[in-house]
Image 1 (cartoon, one colour):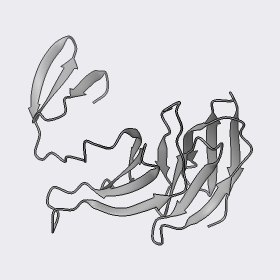
Image 2 (cartoon, one colour; image 1 turned 90 degrees about the vertical axis):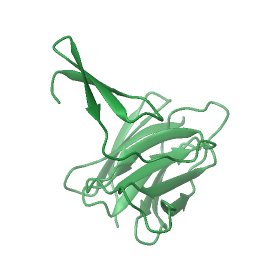
Image 3 (spheres, one colour; image 1 turned 45 degrees about the vertical axis):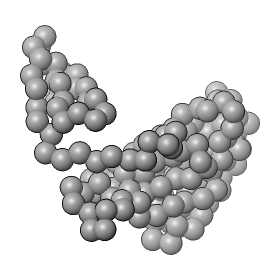
Image 4 (cartoon, one colour; image 1 turned 30 degrees about the vertical axis):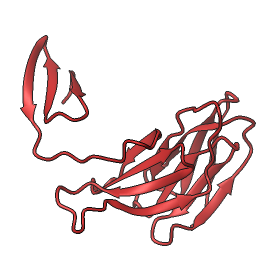
Length: 161
């Protein structure tokens, strides 16, 4: 909602929205919980709105089903390995490619990791930074990715899938 601030508290079923200095409560239709023992460093919703990508301190990037009803109750669909974390506990963001066929995450080992969603295999491991990669972002139409690092640089490059 443009011009509004929305706050969602974990474990509640209401969202409080501030619009034009007036609070209004909105009832949530469904709520999804994730394991509380993971220290999440980055999250990103797929373009389809069906999946959530998380990057956590257990050195995994996971793809979760966020539909209201899940058969079997287990929401983690895939786990992507490779990205690392260190004592800094920086926020290491995740992102989805324009067609949701690839995902990426920053890493404390100074690399950008790109995985194929179908196979969960690393498609590219892009170097060049001299600090933790804190943010990755895909181009909205092409196989181009940008990354920002603690070394105060931003790189933009192409990748092959």
